[in-house]
Image (cartoon, helix red, strand yellow):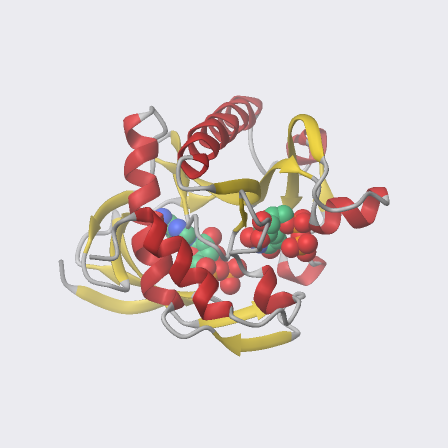
Amino acid sequence: MGKRGLLYEGKAKKVYETDDPDLLIVSYKDDATAFDGQKKGTIVGKGAINNRMTNHIFKLLEKRGVPTHLVEELSDRETLVKKVEIVPLEVIIRNVCAGSFAKKLGMEEGIRLACPTLEFSYKNDDLHDPFINDYYALALNLATREEIDAITKYAFLVNEVMMEYFAGLGIDLIDFKIEFGRYHGQVILADEVSPDTCRLWDSETHEKLDKDRFRRDLGNVEDAYEEVFRRLGISG
Ligand code: ADP
Ligand code: UDP
């Protein structure tokens, strides 16, 4: 598939057009940002790990009935995907209290929630991705009721599949963020699933194996990404 012009350069990925108007190539970078882009850095090897991990997880999710944008892994860092119209909602699922949830509710990190919970942020950098609910999403025409229902159903299914899968690798899935897009009238899972977008804690030691090591200057950032990758058993 021929690569055409750069469509978009984000904080973690570059997105290229291809000869096929329905397909894009995403290219994962080692660049890392946090706190609304205020903190910038590099996590060496992250691009390849996030690319290959996302594709591995997306294949697993497809088997369990979640449609995704994945078409074909092209190289360590590049993947051919279906070009979607991104639904401007960051969909966050939480199993254990951490991050902004812990801060907002004055709770300690690490407390397991009585049941998984879902929240939406309006994906808008100028507004710093504010927290909204489904009524806001409807009122702002960000998505239809049918789309929100499909997104909610898929998001909880993604959580079930990933929780079970990571548990088998000795990893607790604390929380994660996913994005969905519209493709020929259907809502499908897009973007990525990686240590950039998930909180992953070692089940035994509770060591953080995700981007919080970068956000919070905990050290051994690359080691954490490599450890997750190693446990996936695809590092070959
Ligand atoms: P950001 O935009 O937050 O800096 P990235 O650096 O990850 O994030 O950039 C990738 C961009 O591509 C994101 O805005 C994401 O919503 C978008 N995207 C991901 N998958 C697709 C897809 N299949 N089709 C179109 N856009 C996509
Ligand atoms: N997250 C993300 N991108 C964002 C915001 C959050 O991938 O722009 C992920 C984050 O890695 C975590 C989950 O979503 O796994 C919940 O993040 P939270 O709301 O606690 O925000 P944070 O503490 O990261 O600011």
